Image (cartoon, rainbow, N blue to C red):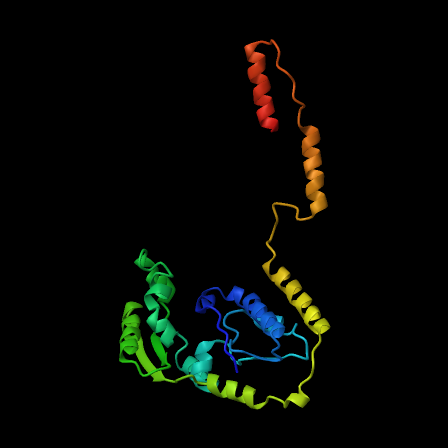
Length: 255
């Protein structure tokens, strides 16, 4: 199994995750892979990641990591549901978030510049739960300091390791068919899926309004209209200074 990573910073811009994953899947298909495991949960895409994955051809086995987000994956779905039921006002940290708390939370939310925003962001939180992937005393200290920084939240650490990530990948690997059983996919399959993904990306990234008509014929027609409205060059000759200034002003306005 080969591993390909996307930037961790995409979790701060989840709307970009589907298109970046789609591009990486296209590349993998072009490289000859016919089984792909997407190690993302929904991760804040609001279902858009699943909609994108539905455009994949049936001949390419693409499986997504189950779960709503990394907290649920690491803690386990049942354990996370219990954590949420026990205290809905819980802020969660992983190793990555504990390590980058100042950059992603304090500076990312502007709390270093506007500390008065702290009650607005975190006033309803009561607890911080650190879902630890490793046994690291330094990260535990950072997570505990984060709980204090966010308003003296109650602190709890749970060592969860990789949670459901490892068994999910193992199950995907174990379900691989033998080479003789693997369905073949053709260039037509790839072209068809690529077209569907590009249409999906176009809809999801389309701006609410456009300041320029994207159609070449419309742009050409616009240039023709502007040229026809442009006054032809005329030699000035001898004329009054006031007329010359007025003419210059009109030409500048038209231009």
